Image 1 (cartoon, rainbow, N blue to C red):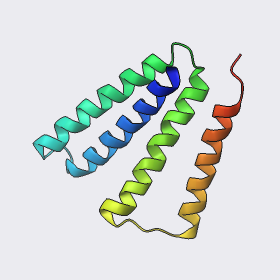
Image 2 (image 1 turned 60 degrees about the vertical axis):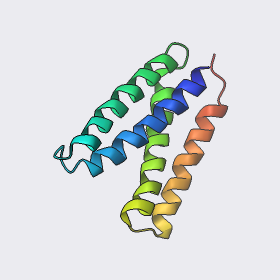
Image 3 (image 1 turned 45 degrees about the vertical axis):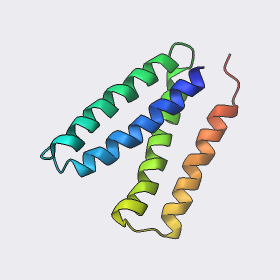
Image 4 (image 1 turned 90 degrees about the vertical axis):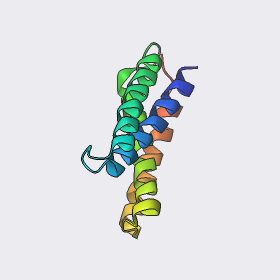
Length: 106
């Protein structure tokens, strides 16, 4: 169940980051509210995952999920640049997440 919580926390991290962009510096009410809700939900689910996962593993995977999702949505929604170096960096982050997931937790 802890991995479900961690992935959920990562998804909420993506949500709040994208909402933050739409909030335009907290000047738009609905995106600002969604940002705050997303932050709270993200931290809540991260805290649940930390009941049994090591902090280093959980934090790295949480931020990795958030980073990958935010970069991809930035490219799709905001027409941010896409090039081979950005893709290579995303692949490295995904590799790190997979590696951390595969390492046995004692």
